[in-house]
Length: 276
Length: 243
Image (tube, rainbow over all chains, first blue to last red; front, side, top):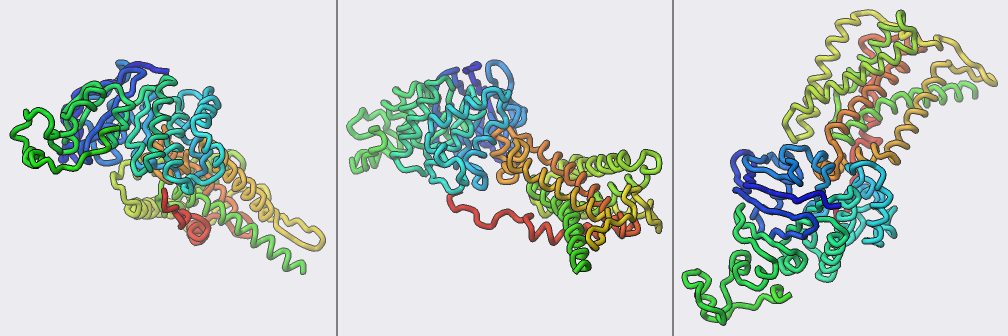
C-alpha cells in the first residue's frame, strides 16, 4: 500500500502571519516505517500535522516556506480532501469522533475521502478485525464510547480511507496506561500491514518503542533526530525534552547546564517512564 | 363533521408546505451552522421565475426552471457571499443573509409591482368531493408532494454518503475535512437544495385558494421560521461529555 516517502523540507509555518510555529523543519517518513515526532506542548507537533494535511487555514495559519511531498508529489497547497485522496490521512488530536453519529456512520464518514469505492468493504473488515469492539457498538452514538474506544474509532475511521501514510496526533493522550499500550500494539500492527506511520507523541517511551526513527521538536525547530534506540539510550533527548539534567552517575560533560546544580545534589526523582 | 375533516386536510396540507420551507432552513443550518434569513427571497425568486415562464414553456418546464433558478440563486449566495466572507462567527454570516434577503426581495418586489401572478398550475380551482368532504386538488397535490420530498430527504440524510458527509461537516468541519469531505461542496449542495425546496413551496403557497404570487408571498416563508427553530434547527442539546 506504500506509495513513496513522505518528505517535509524546510517547512516554516505561522499563524496570522505573526506567530511562528515551525522554522525550517525537515523530516522523512520512509515508506513502510514508523517515524516519531516528540516534543513538549507548543513545540509545533500539531502544526506540523496540520501543514501536511492542509488544515492550517482552519486556524488562520499557513505555510510560509518549504513544503511537503509524497513520493515526489507536492502536497503543500492542496485542500484537506485532496491530501486524503493522495493517501495521507490524519487522526487528529483529541480523537474528534463525530459524537452525534453512530459508530457505523463514523466509519462511513472515514470512507468518504477514499480513492474509489471498491475497497471500502475490505477496509471495513480490516478495521473491525483490528478493533472488534467497534462491531459490537456499531449502532451506538460515538459520543457514548469510552475514551479508549473513541481513540480506536478515530484510528479505524482514518483507516477506512485506506491510507498509505497514517498521521497520528497524540493517540494515547488521556488514556489509561493499559489502553495506551493497546493502542501502541495496534499502531505496530497497522504498520506491519504496510501503512507508514508518522506518530506525534508526548509519551516518549511508547513512541520510541514503536518508531525506528524519531525527531525531537523544540520551539518549532528540529532539535534532535536519530534512531529511536539511540535516542532512548542517550540522555540528549531526556535533557531537551524533559528539561532534566543527566543523572549524576554519568560523565560530567554537561557542566554549564543550569540543571546540573540540582543533579549534583543527587536528589532528583527517577523518571520511571524512561525505563520502559 | 365533513367541515372538520376538510379543515384538517387543509391544515395538514398547509403545514406540509411550511415543512418544506422549514426543511430548507434546517438543511442550511445543519450543513453550515448559518441561519439563512435570505430563504424567503429565494422562495420568491423561484415562484417569480415559474410565474414568468409558464405561458411560454408550460407548467412543468416552468416549474423546473423556477426550481433551478432558486437552487442557482442559493448556490450563488453561497459562492459569492458566504464563501468570501472570511469570518468564523456564524452570527455574522446570518446577518449577511439578511442583507442578501433585502437586496433580492427589493428587486423582485420592483419587478412584480402590484400584480398578482399565476403560476399556471394544472389543478386550478378544481375540487374533489369524497363522501361529502370537499377538498381542493391543490391541497392534495401539496400534501403528496411535500410528503414525498420530505421522506426522500430524510432517507437520504440518514442513509447516503451525502447525508453522512453533511452530518459530519455539521458536527465538526475540520475533522470532516480530514476525512476527505469537501466542505465547500457540502455547503454549496445544501444551499442549492434549500433553494429548490423553497421554489416548490412557492408553488403551493400561491395556488388555489390563494389568488397567486404577489410581493407579499415571501412573508409566508417567515411563518415557517418558528417551525424550523422548534423542529430541529438547533443541534441536540445533550452533547456527550466525553466528546
